[in-house]
Image (cartoon, rainbow, N blue to C red; front, side, top):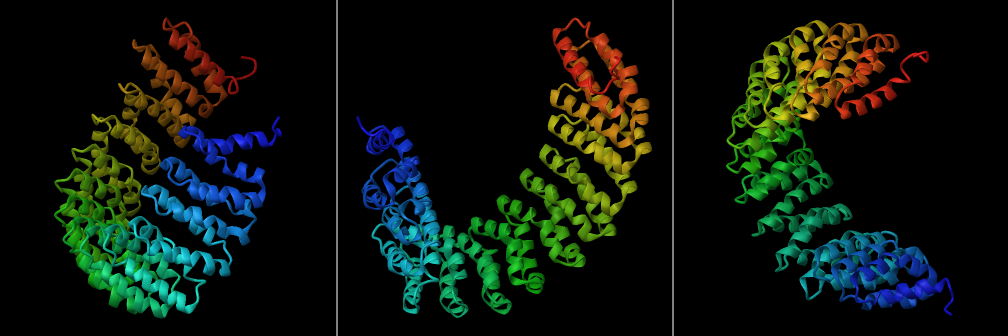
Length: 547
């Protein structure tokens, strides 16, 4: 008989070689258990070499293995033996499946960041050089993600060699390798001395920005922001700014899209003054781009960009574009604009908001596409803070009332969720005149989500305006609805009662709400009776013990 504790381990090791992928996966995920049972020395001498050879496997198994090895340092005897984990991961860095390589690089970075400096120089740096000189492009792609770990602890001569190797990778024949180099340029640059940053890295960066593949250039856009943070302001303006301006006019829309998406970070990198003089024209060009995707990305940054500028500049340059975008042919552009345009109100100030922005809000509120209307509704409070409630109510309330009966139920739902906030801003008198009837109307909506939200809305209004107001304006109308011939509407009334009772207090609950619930218990629809039982249970803590 095999020793009891070791028996499962023997099974797990057998399963590593099994034909059934599920068993192999199960075993790989429990590598730490196998390693603990084998002990540190046997793990180093037997398990790790076995894993190094076992590389012609299914991608799912390899992915699990790459992940497990990243946290394996404690099982091989601690940091001094961390280098034994490098060979199996090096093999995984060369496989064809991208997600396996990425996970192997991530695990190597995790191990490398814990290794001792001498081990890094003896084991990690040679590994990076081997991968970078690999025959197959997959190895070279993986190498790009490891330089920032290898570089800081290398000697001066090794550092120079690593810089030159990275430079070669940036000019590799395979676009995939150049893409990986462009992606990792910022990380590598962050570990480098300022002197080399200006010479070596800027040269590499300029080559990447002029690459003939748009997929490489668009990754260089991200590099602009990363490098901008590392360079001195004057170098940034000299080297990074011209690149951004060129990229914003790039022939590939994907590159322009990337610039539009990253614009705020790029502005932070170059500073406020160059932004005002050089980047405003570039941004205006992107807002008027002939590709809808670029306009969507640019429109989404309108408020953030306006905050960097003075109100005068924003009104002069950005507002005309915003007006054009509000009637853009693409609904997605209008939707992106609607989600951020409200934030421009505090930037532009009261007068400009009333004169210039209000007409745009109103046109977006009447947009035929529901998402555009939704995005405007959900941000109304930002405008209210700037222009005040009187003007808001005169200009926007008619549009809100119209949307309350919108044919898209999600729009009606957004309006309901906004009502308590609107009520607190408008005050009780105004609310009763304009919005009170609407709140009752929603209780009889055809869509359940609306009826449920309407019941919750009544509770929040009762909390806002107090039980006395609720007793006068809400409770009688709600209780009247219990006579509705349709049982689903009677169910909504029960739901509203259960939500209102805690707000209304014991006395009103006992005298007004409870009798209605008790009467409903004699309803002919079983579902109503069942819900009455649930409501009564929720009322127990509220009513007097005598009842």
